[in-house]
Image 1 (cartoon, rainbow, N blue to C red):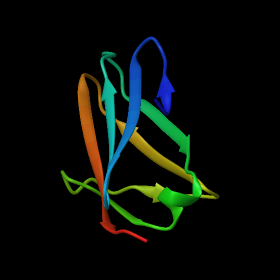
Image 2 (image 1 turned 90 degrees about the horizontal axis):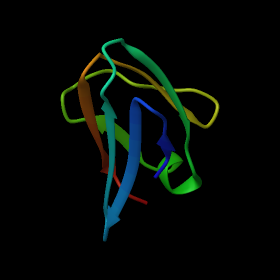
Image 3 (image 1 turned 120 degrees about the horizontal axis):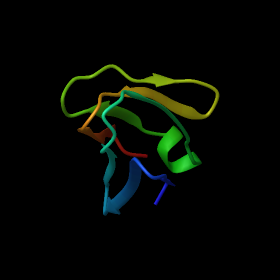
Length: 79
């Protein structure tokens, strides 16, 4: 688990060369999320399966997660 609050859950799974990050927002408000990335995640190109733009800033991932929604991110290239 990368982050867990009353309204937001973010977790990561790795299977061989596949890296997946799942974000869930059960709040009725948009949540601005910023999570730190470890070296394994920083060495990969990460993309949203929905095509939503993400921002990598100073070893962290920033995204606005819409109310009552989820996002799934996966690696494009695995090092």
